[in-house]
Length: 113
Length: 112
Image 1: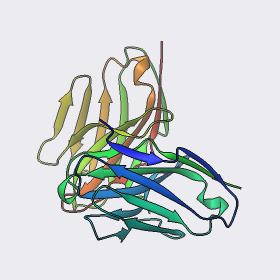
Image 2 (image 1 turned 60 degrees about the vertical axis):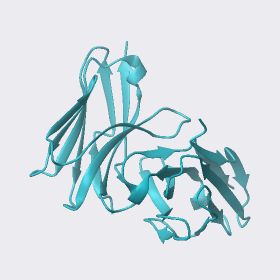
Image 3 (image 1 turned 90 degrees about the horizontal axis):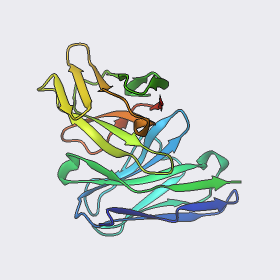
């Protein structure tokens, strides 16, 4: 059972470079999320998608864009990476209307130098 | 601003002791309160969750206590074990909403 799969697991970028973090879930969930985790800050919501074709900003959306490609996949794009975006990024999904358990991926550790 | 405030930031408990982590919230629209456990290098995983129609929920050694009037909830880990050493996050969400609001986390160390 794969659950939520994120790629890549690790990435180093230079300031100004762009990249896309990929996320896919195989649980037929409607809702998907991107969080970032920084020491002492907990998990903060970047963007979420309540259903295929919809996306909404979370608490810290600046510098990011997202695409809900289909029901399974939700990608996060950094157009011009900045050192402040050094973080661990988690994708998550949950069932209908966001109710119930949210399942998290293993995370992507991103370093921007 | 942080919608869920969690304390303490870190906690050291001896094996067999009780670990207690507290959280407080302001938004009275929250009606789903989960706790997540995270081991190093892994994503958070749901440990236990409660809705405000009950004051306590127990699953094995883990208990959530919920005080609706005080807008507080807590996680109790009974008979704490070294394998419980992890970071614990409380969270809250609105039932018809779509995203969890997390506390900043508590790093728990259970010593042998």
